[in-house]
Image (cartoon, rainbow, N blue to C red; front, side):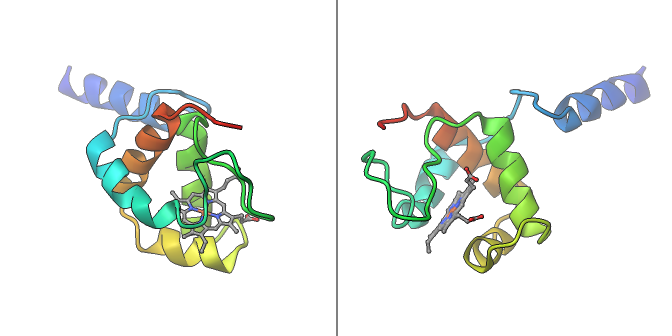
Length: 103
Ligand code: HEC
């Protein structure tokens, strides 16, 4: 039974497109101070910098993991994601997805 429960838990985390991301929102808010120097939360778009507030947590996790594993090219985001743990990424995803997009 323990094995079965673990398998179910692992599957729900790995499910693509799943909205079930568990993370520490307060940690995400703390870590976000670095992100918002580039990713504006005011609705003002910087050229070439996508808005990340209000995006589904699962897609933010996917995108950050793609930079971290260097599957997605972009030196700036690859270097930032390389410093983040999986917990940091989940926390950031939960925080940014909880914000209302302002644009
Ligand atoms: C120095 C500026 C800068 C900082 C700081 C920064 N980003 Fe980015 N971010 C970018 C740029 C530029 C892109 C677009 C890269 C590309 O074309 O793939 C991007 C893309 C992204 C994307 C993909 C969005 C999409 O819709 O495709 C996510 C998610 C993201 N950043 C999250 C973060 C998080 C979380 C942090 C803080 C830990 C952060 N970024 C810090 C500049 C920055």
